[in-house]
Image (tube, rainbow, N blue to C red; front, side, top):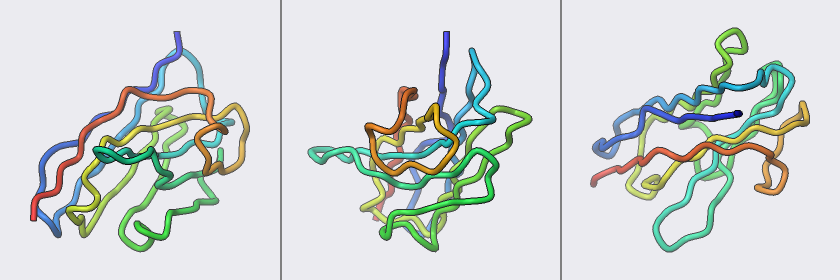
Length: 124
């Protein structure tokens, strides 16, 4: 059974940092593009960041560019999202996702596997 399990969420003050992790099990994703999405209360799920299979290519939503960094450790089958200079508008449930394709993907429909999400709350 394929599972993506996020961790690292929590409550942080504005300006603070958090590092999310997404551990994969049940299959290897070393040849898969992966990504992070988020959903705030009352809003649609939105793209945050994506990374290709090797980790050499990344893409970010404009709202997080320069503050968030996506990375991966294929030896550990784990995806990360380092979030710095957090703002209250970053408050959301954050989901990791994995594609069966190797490249970067920024649309929800491009992904085949999803985690259950981890809550990030940024207080002002």
